[in-house]
Length: 418
Length: 200
Image: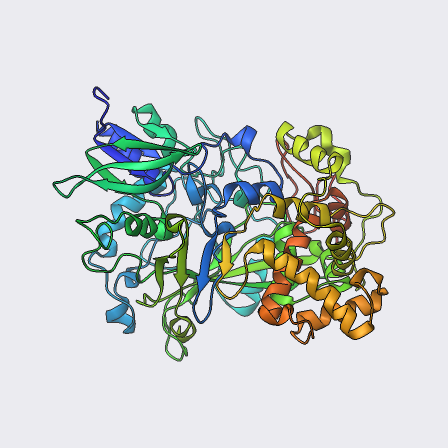
């Protein structure tokens, strides 16, 4: 950057912000990225330890959850630090299906997108190549069946158990395309099957933006400022954003720029826009429609655990791998619209204890005994979608620290109708 | 099938092969149990007794759980969600402890929960879980969700301890090493448990 004022300031260097930073920096723009959390070093900041990583990598600041059916927002819901949620995502690299863009036409629910699958197709291909996604020889569902840049991962026992179960029921299943290297690239090794995808990948085999797009952005001259919690966008007399105010070690600082991109997650982005009220924009930035913070969508994440006579040892291998999309699209006779993916999602001991407590309602001797059989269990996740609803809203609370708390309401009626 | 056990397994046997950061974290968890900072002496006694019923253990030196809860609350390390119908985290734990003592007083005419025998303590805990407690304090929170939140936090600290890892037969930290024999019916030599359970 020749002058002090960069072309672009990006707020939130996570799954989206890091990609934007890399692309713009490579194209020659001067880029400054601000992230609320630290810039992690995979080897010295991460660890093979659930407890300390849960406290470190997740966005744990208090969010108030309200509504008919308040949902849990904490833990793996969103990330803190450069790389954001991709530092602890399981790593499934699934493309949307064509119908996902036309739910109103196909299923009579939701809204149609203004773009379609073909518009996105080249970008899917580019991302898969850049990240050296590993995948099956043939992916059975959707518009794209492969190939993928790298071979699929080997099935650990839990993924194999999933395959056998599906086969016995006559359901097709596959190993999924994954943002995890199955063999080494020039600068990163292949997966070591240590089972900590959700807690920071120490060998850097998982392609979080922290180890892919962020180094790329830095190589092309982008500057990333960690531990910078942006609290306000400041508007000049001409009605455009001139700078942002951020907190760094308790001090207020300002960052100027020409263009500002807010990519701070579906809760923090509206929170920031709503908190940037001014005389010119009494309802916050970009909110003349009143739609900022509305139609917040989450995905459903139900769990099934199953116990086997043999030892599964689910702690080994990539935390996600095997899946079926047999119920992803609507079939005649289904009593519901839209669908879901069933996928393996290994749970390390603490997470498994949480599943037993919240799912089975056990405590005391029963909890201890169920946990002693940890090695006999499999864990599958069922990931479905929610419909947009104006009742699902991020609003600011009225307390003094309004900027720091989001109130989230989800409309339970919509959820159960799916 | 009775619950599994791994009497000869000690996850710490492989500690020298762990990465430095993981080793430091686990060593410090074992050597420096947090000093009391949040609960009063009486609150701590009640909670310690409750944790031993929620996560019963017969060890001569029990896995410390209460001190880690105390530390979490003292530092107000929140979990990211506060349900609108529940009090903030620190207040919820105080209410839980007060409710245990109130219920003990109501039902057993005892000064505090810690003075009850194990069976009576379980009865008190069940009353809180089911929302059937006569404690006026507990009447102000959604019983089941609050109760599960409490156990979840306690279990987080219990299952972060190497002795609990031995109890469940967890294979342990594996970096910079790696798991090699990951198929059904196979295991690496240092992993706990039987081999060849069922051949794939």
